[in-house]
Amino acid sequence: MPQQIYMLPAKLITILLPFRQTFLSTQRFVYTILMILSLSALTNLSYGQACDPSTPTFTIDMTGAPDSIWHSPPIARDGHCCAASSSDRCVEFNITLDAGSSGIQINLISGALPSGALFYEIGCANPTQIGDTLCLDGVGPHRITFCKPGNNTNVYEIVSLQEPTVSPPITVSDGCQGLIYTIGYEESTIE
View (cartoon, helix red, strand yellow):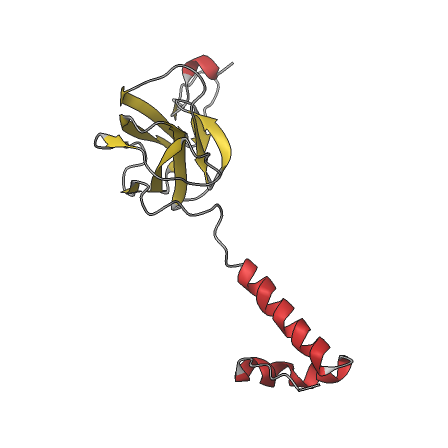
């Protein structure tokens, strides 16, 4: 049986060579190295699958404005993202939020507005109804995709939601007054 030659980076072999004696054979040693390399490659994968090159993609930087609103130009969806079916067409948004933002809301503000459930996703997961808010951790960038059948033209609105703020604590004595406040809550949701 001819010997097979395995090519591995010299630095990796140098680091792992002292551990070779714990393996029963060169073949097992090489398989272990390949497994380590495979696992390290998996840790570098991004969340979600890439969109087709034909998918319209927008890069939106909301840094400096935690309560900003962005409108897309009129755009027709095209291409596929995530697990979109053959009739679905998609649009992709790569959003960087301000550090003072806590989430987003995506709306369709013009074009065909069909009834029924319309969902967008972050990283090809967590379907969120168009018009509902989505809390996000960190500034991102966050990869948002919206797919539905057809390729009609729409204008998309992305609203950055500012984190609520509360006044600093105060101390008052009996008979005195002070002012405390909060900003950023929906009054109807406070009990």
